[in-house]
View 1 (cartoon, one colour):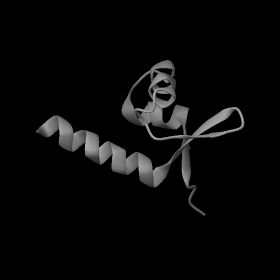
View 2 (cartoon, rainbow, N blue to C red):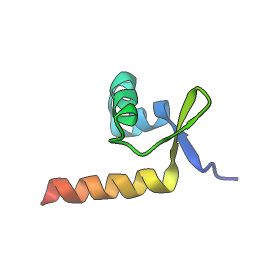
View 3 (cartoon, rainbow, N blue to C red):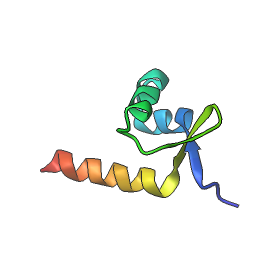
Length: 60
């Protein structure tokens, strides 16, 4: 079964950013995420939609 979410650590690795910078982006709402207790989880579909939108914005 494929997971529906990524962890902040997984997203940081995919983006090639520091974990602390990724947490900051999540807390500021720049990366779509949901809080589950003490953990932040990034929904896969929302993350990929955000990533595709960010790539389009940079190309413009």
